Amino acid sequence: MKTSQSISDTTSQTYLAGTILFANIDYASFGGYALKAAIGGFIWMAFKLAGDYLSDKLLSKRKTKQANVQDDEPPTRAENEKE
Image 1 (spheres, rainbow, N blue to C red):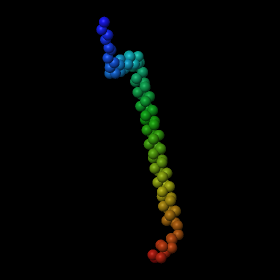
Image 2 (tube, rainbow, N blue to C red):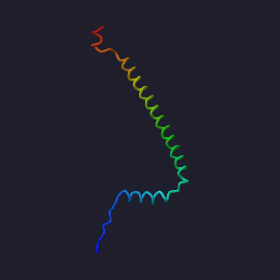
Image 3 (spheres, helix red, strand yellow):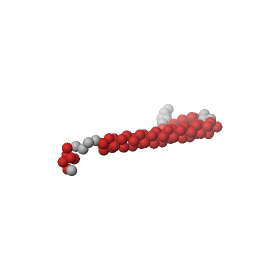
Image 4 (spheres, rainbow, N blue to C red):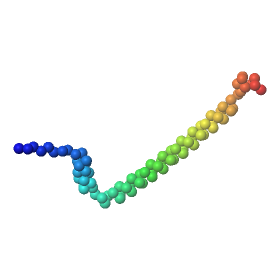
């Protein structure tokens, strides 16, 4: 009696699993999901851009404030000796 060995191929197993999973998907709901994902992405992008804009604006305001404070400081001894 001859025994036969079954060859386990991962490609065929993956293909079979993918076929089974995609056979049970409701394709009518993909449009609704895509629309919700796009709207969510636009909302996220709007918040991200607004946050970046406000962050840059606040940082530049802080830098100019620090520059103005440094300009208002009295000159040091080394600066007085140069004049």
